[in-house]
Image (cartoon, one colour):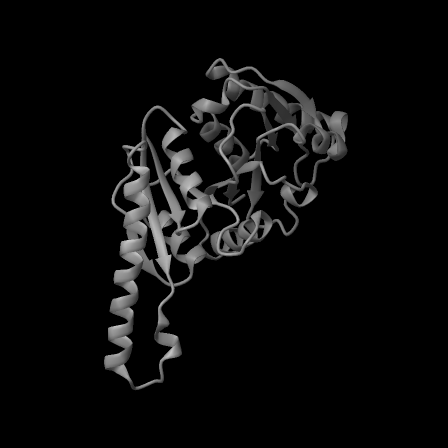
Amino acid sequence: MLNIVVSVDTSHQAKIALEAADRLSSQVRVQPVYVYDSPSRDIEFGAGWARHSWEKETCQQAQVRIENLVLTQRDHCLDIKDPVLLKGDPVTKSAEFFMQNQFDLLVVGVPFRNLDSVQLIHRFQTLARKKKKGLPLLILRQFKPTGGTIILTDGGEAAEKALGLFLRFIPFLSAEIILVGLERAGDPSKEIQLLNLERGRAILKEKEVRAQGYTISELGYDGIKKKLETADLLVCPVLLKDEQFNLSKFTLSKNQSGLFCIGQE
């Protein structure tokens, strides 16, 4: 069973995220989370009755909006649970809910609350660093698992967790997969790149999944960018201590999605 949190609002991207989450694997449990912003900060201090009344009304309005979204999606997504409503910052509260419960993946449709992919990852990376916890994050623009996947691996825990999660994404496994062995911090040698590539291949082979393999020295970042032009999904490790993570070298198109395991090592 793949247990998924989907951070939603009332946008078209949220509908795509809910639909995609339900179709990722043969057995899924999807938990929508909607975070609304309280109006209390705009009410003068001391007007407690007004603040309480406005917060209650805002919560009720948010509940109606998000329940309508979930009911619409349940026509073809039967494994969606009743939505959870939270108050506060959407990125922070979504991540905290994920970390405090037993889930495998956090899914967000982008753009999300006016944040693009890179901005979102920076926000989640900062929060994960503060909490000292990993965070597997799937950012979805649209669900089109036919154009192939590019997987970057540095042989670390975050990269190998991303590979393990990817192997549960059944719709993507039948399309072309390209695996790229990266360097490790402090060791840019071709030998370590090849070792990381072979470690990644071994994980894929356990599930009888084949991939074209390259080292970063063979392809170069320009070569990866070229292959990304026809891919639908980028799988990429993001380390808590990294200020410049791998995604900063790429630009995802409007049709591409990314699986980013934010790890601790």
